[in-house]
Every structure is written in C-alpha cells, then in structure tokens.
Length: 405
Image (cartoon, rainbow, N blue to C red; front, side, top):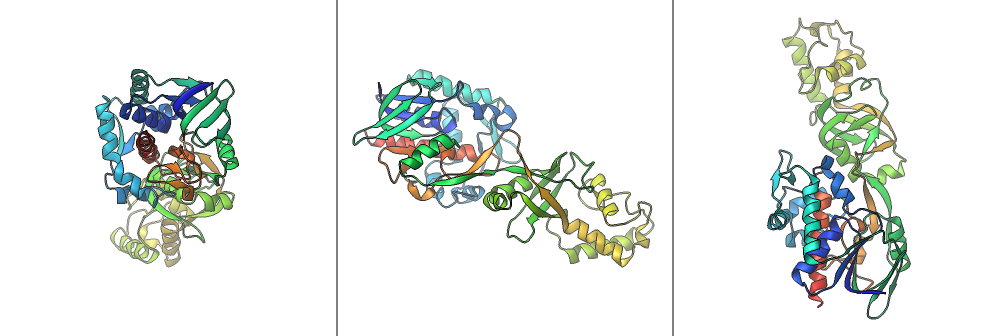
C-alpha cells in the first residue's frame, strides 16, 4: 500500500499541469501521477500536427468562453482566474517561449510538441513527482479520511484525488457508481462525409463559406475545405462542435446548406449576377470566377446550374441566373456520416457540469475529489481551446488542494 497526499489519475496535459502546480506551491506535499498506458502526454505529442497548439491568443474571458459549445457559462469564472495570458506567463517561467500565428493559435517557438513534453518531464523530475505508468485503475473507494485507489499493480491511499483521465468510459463508469451523473459521450470536431459530383474532383479547394443544417438552427461560418471524403475546415468543425448532440441524434444523416458567398443572400446574389451579365456580356461565364473562390469550384457550380461551358454572360436566361444563384448561396449537399478530424478526437460528454464546483474544480458530491480537463462535459472547437481548459482547470484544482493543507 502506497501513501500520498495527492494522487493525480491521468498522465495527460491536465494531470501533469495539476501535479506540477501543487508541488511548486507546496513542495512538502507528496504527489504522484498514475497513467494506465505505457506513455504519458500522448495527446500533447500529436496536437497541432506535432507542434502542440498550447493555447489561443484570446485574452478576454468573456470572449474566450464563446469558443466552448459546452462549458461557456461555467468557464467564465475560472478564466477570470487563469486565462490565456497566464498560460503564456507560466510556460515562459518554465523556459518555453510561445508564438502567435495569424489565426490566433499559439505554439512553442520551436514548433515541436516535444518542447512541452520536455518542460513537463523536467518539472516532475525536479519536483520529485513519480510518474507511474501501466497503472490501470480498477476501483475507487472513499473513506471518511482518504481515497483508496486500486490499480492492476498496487493499492494507493491519498487524502485528495484529482481525476484527469479525459474521455475514458471506464473512469466515467466508476464515478457513476460513486453517484456522479455522466452526460453520454458523443463525438465533437468531425468532418462531413459527402459524395457529390459538384465536389468530386475538387480535393484541396478552399473557400470562405457559411454552412447550415437544413431544418435546424445550427449554422456556422469560416473557411471550408473540400476533401476526398467530403467537407472539412474550420467552418465545418465549428458546426460539428456546436451540433455534436443534434447531429449524433440524426445519426450523421442530414442536408447541409452551403453559401459559398458567405453572407450574401439570394436577392443580392441575383443583382450581382445581373450586373455581370451586363458588364461581362462577351465573356464566357465558366472561364473565370467573379467571386473570391477558386476557378475550379466556380466551373463546377456553373455546370451544376445547367449552364453550357461555352455560353457567354449575355446569353444567360433568367432561369440560368436563378439556378446559378441557388448553387452559390444555397447549395444543398447530402451528408452521410462523419470522419474524425486528424488525430485530434474530441468528445462532448462527461461529468455533469452541475456536479462540479467551478471555484475549486471539486466534486459537489464527494469531498476531496477534483476534476480537470476533458473528463468534465466541456469541449471546444479546434485552436488551442481544449488545452486552455486543461491548464485552467488544473491550476484551480491545484490551488484548491494546496489550500486544504
């Protein structure tokens, strides 16, 4: 039987951040990290294509929370205590400089996730925090004074337990047995499978578009990327995140309405097309895109409107113009399934937000039990936001644990 003041379950971003902050604030506390796998920080390693998207350059809590489909209201307080700027400062103090990219994402200046892994591994070594791998938790037991954690190898006793096990169904089941409500997990951040002649040979083509799920309030805007399996890009990922539960209920079978002109409506589009009919009367319609998206996409939409590739603008009929406007601002695509976005699989679901005290990250049901990271029903769109939730939750949990000693 091994005794610790604090056991951190989960050797990922949230687990390491919590452990390091506890030990730095109170070096006398005996802290250990338990990880069921052979390796730690595996999600950190693959994040951002191996560069690790540490956080996002959004420094106002009220703005930052808007990137979280689940957790927006709950994270406002925590972000006022530890926000993106605090993350940057923390890593700088630990020898890691971050840089901001054009889209606001932040990475280590080395462009390598190994820099973040080395930072954490150096810190736990320096602080004397044991990282115990291959420790798969089999049961959790609460006594009046401590937690008893049984793994496949050992039995641990700890005054405080921090659960940072991410989207692990086995851990959710154990916490459910202890009384916690688990919001059923569904995928978030996924791309749409679409087989359609209009996009069949356009892999790699990108356009700024707005997208909407037909007969639904779900909509989003942003760059849309055509792939060999359908559609991806920030706009699609945003829609998938906000629609995670609704789209799961539809079994990922729905009609996607795409406005390739982003915020232009049908009437405005028709006026523009009529103007082009006058201004470019002698030019061939299909030859060059008059809008801010690639020629290949334009030619595909012209063909889908029933317009001959050799026809000139002057010869377009009223029906031609209306068909083209419909393709441009309200193209309907049948979605049949989803695909995981790269390796960055994110799940909506987990510990019910109502059962977590967001001032301390402590369970409202079980004393001296804390949560950090994706184990809670919080998730964000891509761009460093899920890591920021891990850092913030880990920091507050650490502060709360230390405050009890």
